[in-house]
Length: 74
Image (cartoon, rainbow, N blue to C red):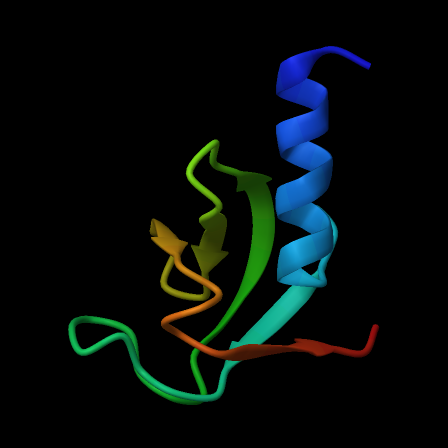
């Protein structure tokens, strides 16, 4: 595994979700995202953030440490 793959794996493990998982925010981010917003995980950033496509169609990153979320069962 190369360095980029290792960072991706570490981010995925820390976030507790996989690409394709649906998540729901437990708390807003203090901006445009609010508790209860749902989206699908699309990628993981090198900085540990989770890239999500939200129900409104926009892609936004979430810091899983600062903005708690839960995985929605399939």
